[in-house]
Length: 505
Image (cartoon, rainbow, N blue to C red; front, side, top):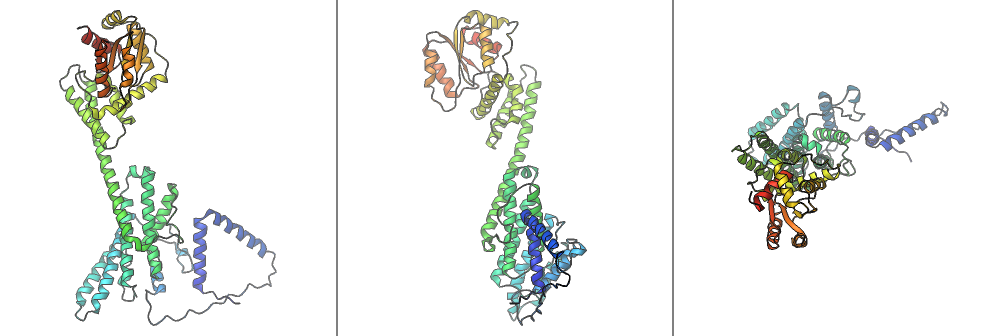
């Protein structure tokens, strides 16, 4: 049986093979192996053996009426546009070659051209209906068409083929879907254009944007195929831009990047809704990021004022309020309490917090994370040597507590800080009880009630309100000398609070 092949058949085969070896490394290796085998085989064949003939069947005449724009006219127009806009090299511009898209147009231009094509598609559909009417305002129809053509000329000669009088357009329903697909592609490009440096570093964001762009361009291509129309320039540019970006950023898209896995054009409405939702979500994220940057600047400013302030300065309390309010606002925006940047701002002023200033519950998670961080640092480092000298205050407390057992409640146990307090006050034992949020306080009663417990220290900065309150109540009921520590673990600070609260000094 003879097989007849037209030039178009050969071109389609060449284009399909080129696309296959371009997109698949395995296919490329196989193609090279086949080519090498063919060369080796041909070298052993006698010259007089002629190749099998190729029968070329003449192209049949076009029918009287065609449902779509003549394919050869559209293809020629597309080829000319590609050549004019430096899309293909001169050697690649022949009709028998595939289109090698090397440079792509700016995404901003692609979005504007896609949106204009959507408007032109809707107008072509509307114009077709208006021209049927006997009293159709032909002058007004022509003016609107000319206006669109002028806009197209300002967008790098955008080809509005749907406005051509020679174009046999698809049915109205198909044109409606095509226009929606052009709009979705434009919106997907807008979303991509709006990506900032932070978005490009977020792989989840990058995947979401790349996937919806892939789906939008695939739906447009599929809609064109279903209507018997040639590929669109904007869709082609978007595809090659996206393929290059996914390769550069190692983002794998499982769907919508192959002809055998297209998006459904009829699903344009749901796709448009998801595009708008993604656009809004990314816009909200960027706005939140900008707000975070402003809050971080404010936090750094007031923390610096606190560090540089002279002891007893009146404005310090106001700065501390600003620090607390700003830190709480950052938490509300989703910043983690354990974030390194916020910790580094607060650590240098940790011991400078005034004793009369309560710690707001809203920022307590930050200080609890700081406490865990400092405790982990102590566990990972060797203990410091004993202090060479004691202050008079520490020496006085040591004379009162020597050989005693003390319970300390709040925060995470720091081994070096515990050892420093035991040495400074010459204690028999310092039992440090770590507290945890939303945990019953019943476990505190046993260590407090022990006969040899002399005093109970409560770190109100690290313990929750319920832990602090219940610890103080238990200590008073058992006559265990409760002491609230509003600042830190420094022996001098602890000694001052012990003398003031228990010995009236």
